[in-house]
Length: 58
Image 1 (tube, rainbow, N blue to C red):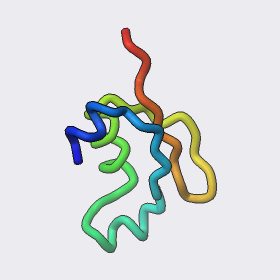
Image 2 (spheres, one colour):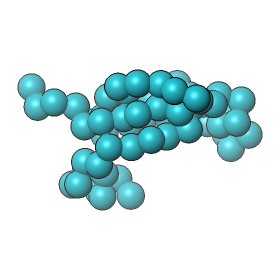
Image 3 (cartoon, rainbow, N blue to C red):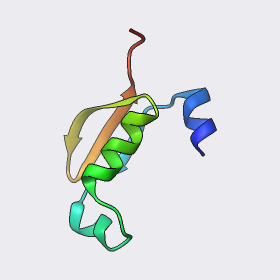
């Protein structure tokens, strides 16, 4: 999955409801950190979701 995200760099809509993520052993903070480590940035939050887009080349 990581290779797919790194190679194709799609826009992603990801659940960021912390109490739901904790049921699966994760957290909002962990999801954001993971996607940032793959080159994505959180552009917008809405209805418990986050829109992640590929970070612009520096």
